[in-house]
Length: 290
Image 1: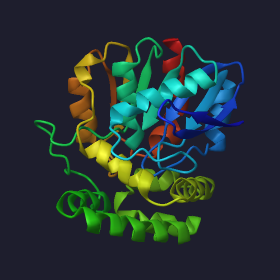
Image 2: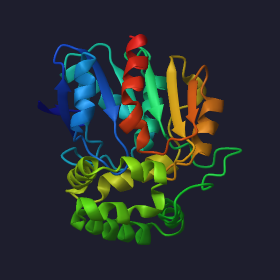
Image 3: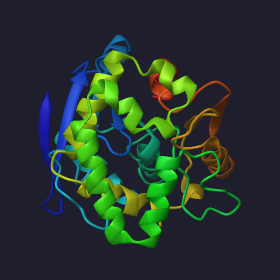
């Protein structure tokens, strides 16, 4: 089911609501760039567990209104708006990659609404003390981040070029587009079915342009708007040592700074493998904390 949710400041959020209609609600924060599109095996996984599976386009992506200058913490009001519109008074949440910081914001700021959260392959805060942000990161992401800080105009121009390349790519070509980020572990799960979904999801998110992507970069690489030490609910953190999208140092840093976190740092996982191979584990952990 598709919903359009109005926010308090006059924006709209595009939301997809599937799984079990009267099941336990789980809101998902997808990566960067991405969209609210749902991968059929993920929906099946949720349905098997009695989960109401909810995704949304972050501001500027897909059919959601832009919110220029947004911080990571700003997502909590969007989550509140979604829950209010869908008559949800309690919700679990997980997110991956660029969605990870948004999950952590919910964990820090939505204790009245969210009983537990799971963060998968999340980026850590820019400038975090003791973290080499780029160590182990694929060339594509390193280049984009450095350009973001050195020349915003050139950064946006490159994002436009990258968007055109992604929108033109076939599922078979997409792996080559992102090849510096893909470890052997991730290449092994980049099946034709997943490749087709990946292309469709990125295309849906970037259909209106690169605003959502840029807003994510501003949010991730600026002050997040909350403190990790404010987290008091159960949090599951997962990160693979073979991850080139977001290297494992980010997960290790977050694990050392989130109070009471349950960290699972795995030897053989990459980035994409966390949902491809471990989503059932993530859902089961969340449901245990319902």
